[in-house]
Image 1: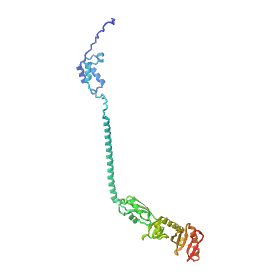
Image 2: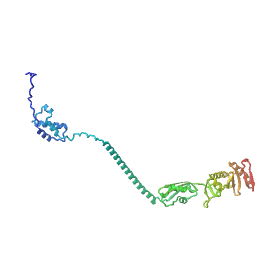
Image 3: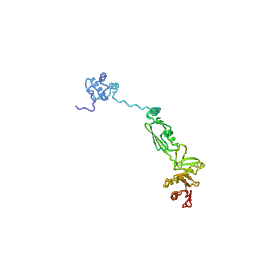
Image 4: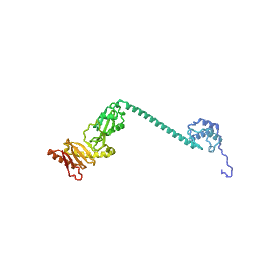
Length: 355
């Protein structure tokens, strides 16, 4: 039968069954809450509602709306343990950042204190070990001085060098102050340079450079002089020497200008070195080197004390002439007393004085 649009709507023959709240509650109590997910909880509630109505399916209109019983059910169901908690709200307030900065400063201070304590502990341990180690090496008989190696010594021997250093055999090797020992050695007039070293367990190495005396300089006192003219030592009874003597200087000259006096000695020794290079020097030993007031040089040679007045440098040619004259006179059986070759204006002129 065709329905008239103007007729009122027909009532549905489908019955809506009311939800039994007690049945829903019982179903929820029986369901495992800790393992159910949010979607499963919804299925449980629907299942419980269906069971309470005798198994008939609830109408769509009823499922789409929330009844008073459904709202109560959703309120009573506790949240699942697996459901994520909402993020906590960040702390705020006027004093939050000040408290944060204070906390950071406190943490920094604690870290600094820990570091300082660690350093202090390490330093303390190291210091203790150093003290123990120093005590051991300076007292142990293992490091007793039992051998001395000396290099470069001519005048000095091992015993005299140890005496200068201030130690002796049998003493602890580490009791020798190497720097102080070097200064003590170099304070000796014979020693121009010194070096000390330890060779464990008990050897002391001494390396020295000694001055070599080339002449004895008589000028008030008698001094030993090097080839360079340095007056390095006053002669005493311990010096056993056989050296030519440099004369012509006095104490006043030496006191007024020591460097100048040493330079004059060096020039005189240059003339002596020229003489020593000539073969006749083997016959007539150089005995004296006299420095003239004008810095000319006169040599006294041989047992007959022959005087060779050489004047100023260069001396080689003048020495050649002097030896030629002396040789000719020797063949004639005559001995010259003085051979004068010191005329700088007329260097070819030679004057000979006989005995």
